[in-house]
Image (cartoon, rainbow, N blue to C red; front, top):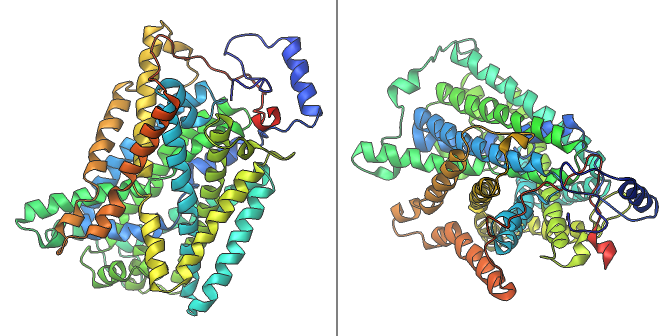
Length: 536
């Protein structure tokens, strides 16, 4: 993007002379379209804290408790939370240094290999364009808590899909306000549920049962995971299953990188947003898992039945099971309403992420150039149109059993994408860090520096590679061997290899030399990113 002649981004520290300013004014007033930097700091921070939180935390956290026990689930979420936090700080260093770039798609191109940028870009687009209809269909299923007629599900999907498309067509300013409101609702609800669980744990609920750390003492880990013996082995494997599940729950945090093109004062805004990720990990995830494990037994029959049925509505939520056991009325309906809005909001942000990743790929020439065309209000119109077509996949959830199986299988093949993206981000940071050393550039110039570098990036890279490798281990424990789940769990790896090797052979790309790597920043204060489609 920085190579565009219509882009006023330049190397950091170089003066913006009168010619540059005059050209920027002329381009903005001559109907040359560009991305609008309209996202305010409060909006970006809220998106960073609660943006992509959907049904995972409210519903799937119960599976983590059942698999690992209260201690195993908490340890799993803490470990993965630390790794994700280190990854975000590594990404933050690069983003704040060069917010004019195309996020991790351009960083992997400039700092590692253009073939890696191509792979990460298309892998991320496929992940988000598939995850958006998954959340959308989940929202429609959640409504079945009140309306059990499955024939109405298509109507709900239609209404929500049209709503998401309209929000994205209105421009990033309105998208930001929409997400700010829904992210605030999620945070208020989760904080309220944490307080509620604490009250229940201390015996303040109508049942007056003071639980304390009862379940931590009685069953801290899962001694019967898949019926494995001895119990020590079952405990470890149950804990390991939580690691993989926690990684999926944290998925989507990297979407913050796509905001760099449309954030006002991006260096200040993104620096604050990256730091806010810590509160998301500790407050929204770790505290929630801690209190769920204090209030609910991992062998609770209602919890096990909910996990087996995977109804998709509030009855599956561990929070609702806790509330029901404590004999508190009405709240299940409120929680279901919040789960519904969370799923809708997560789908909206995933849809946004898929359109911006397409725009970034088109800007770099790694996708058809027409996908970089933007309207006067800064909307990548053709990228939105293409992603909207994939949104129609959510209707598979309304079909017969075969269609539903196909939909679940399609959604499953994206499960490793986030961890693979995180590995790519860590690798790009490692290469960038080393290149700065080779070129004699001081890290003191960076407007945002994270701690424990470059060791943090190495820890992220190695840890997630290990988790990826063992992510589908439960398919080997099933009797008979679950070949379909095995393929769904690991097909992303050969898919990424085909993208990388294919692009490398076709374009004959090379790994970027450390001495020749472009480590400079291309951001100029108050500059915008112009659509390269205007050049063609």
